[in-house]
Amino acid sequence: MWAKLLYMLGSSENEQADSPHNNGTALKDTSLGNLIAFAKFSSIIPSESLLNGFQNEITNEVKFAVQLHELSKSNVGLNGLLCALFQSWIGKPFDGGVDSVEFASLKKALDLLKDDGCWRELEKLYGKDKAFSLVLDILFEMSNDEFMWYRFLRNLQYDTSFSIPLIELVEFLRTTWRHKLSSTKI
Image 1 (spheres, rainbow, N blue to C red):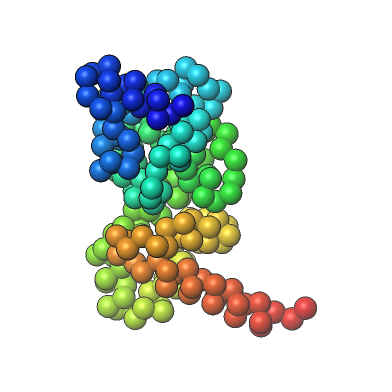
Image 2: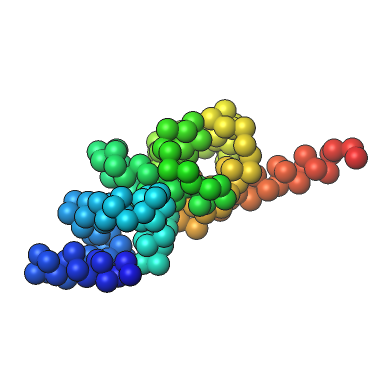
């Protein structure tokens, strides 16, 4: 259905419709605006409906999320779609609201993880393991839900465009948990 809708939107302007995996051009003004309008008209929770449509077309969810995050800074209407995507990553249902502290934390975390200067400075000053620990401390200050952060980071871990080596950060978090469990008396 979504592929057909994308085609109809594109052909109405006498050009082929953009799909999310064609250089990310589907996230440009008119096509996405039309899709959002269609989702709002046809669904109880339009952002979730739109995300479900996009997930069939997306080849790389992380790149899609990063691009969507950047676009949402100038187009607040995209926050619902980004929130629905993040909620699906952390295993929580999306209720249509984008004003949660949790969503704000996830957006802030994405900015932190993309900040090349911050990571390089931490790694230079403290070494990789201590820098990982500090990054996790920052995330846990935003939200103490460690499982949420694990799920979020696990979804991002294979994207090498982040300055922080996320695969290693996820493994560091797992190792930290193993040490906590082994030192806990039952």
